[in-house]
Image (cartoon, rainbow, N blue to C red):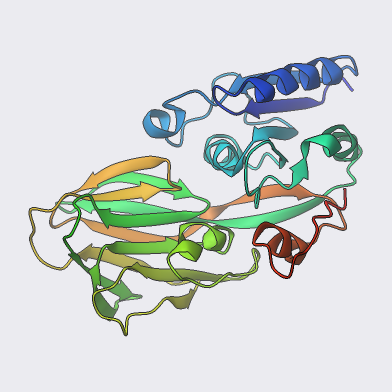
Length: 293
């Protein structure tokens, strides 16, 4: 199996993650597999953004991520966007994306190597910041884009158009544009709906809207969304991508958001149940977690 390559990305400054990554690297190497291991270092998400970690080839056969959903989000933007299938091992909290518990890691990795895991495609958002008619930055995100203010007790106006048609001007703390994958993140905390991960839709969710009739809205994933500040303000406004990359917005900037051509490939056991995850993680009906791995 010398031609097989596996990348390992593990949680930043997390001793158990580093230890487990080292053990997994040795286990894979003993089986003749080429392994590239890298810690998700501080600043990887903020500074390098969409850049690929230097040690992990974009042509790797698989990637194993040890950590929480935040670690997987960073890995998805850096390597997963090149089509490398990702197996997420949960060493964090909720674990909507890191589907495999640590105690099932080696069993799941064996299934991965033998091709017995299901590949689930997850849509990404692409966002371009247009400043003075030029593209200032471009981002790819798996969970969500958030536009919000940085000052307490103030509101901002955000004008939104969908496919060239005016939707409304949201007044409040900000706005979330989420993928189905990201529906269980900030969107859920802000009162937005949960979407099944493979649905063909996006969610536009206002954050603490001043107008109480403003509610989250589902739109098809073929739509193009444009968000811009509705009036000039001294308030500092920031665009946050997957809760990890921040970019300051200026008055007159347009954030153009649409479905990316890139999809992330997540690996999961054949009998994995998303509804079981919801029952367990959100504590619905006192359900007991069954990883089914």
